Length: 250
Image (tube, rainbow, N blue to C red):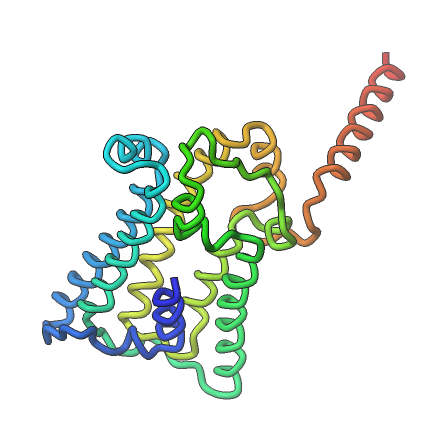
């Protein structure tokens, strides 16, 4: 996780994406682009495929549940290390924003990184890395299920970390071809992940998540925070008023 954070921070600042990995193949631009796309495809497929409940169920035939999350974290780290090792630079510039506007764009990108970090508040780091599962040593059926709880970020947008990632990637005063390629690929990855994760969340939390999904946008924040109790009361009051108006008309 620390390695991921350091690499992503370097990427956002432009240091990693505009330099070669440890193995610079010195390829023509089109070949370098193919290598980078293949690396990103490996990383995204590993993340989305291994995270699916059906795949997890099959994995448990070989790997006990307490070690399942640790295996996922290790595979993700290895895939990321391969990206860092093999990344091929595409440094040609797509755009450059001059000062003082460049500073404003940089601040917007930094805000995206801040959203990623702060919206993760309340998440259990040990559980994300699989340490909690390994320590408890219980089966999937006995592992405590998380209640449906919303922190302030999730009351305005369903996926604040994805939103922060996209803002951090696209809000840069100096956009290289390599970074734009990465940013566009991550946009596609986010849309793919949303399609998969939304179904998983609906199956896990049922009607509660369906109501939340209708009320809160996926990536574009709503102006007012989502308050389910208040909005449910307002909806009930509107239904009562509508029923009263219908009776009067009759």
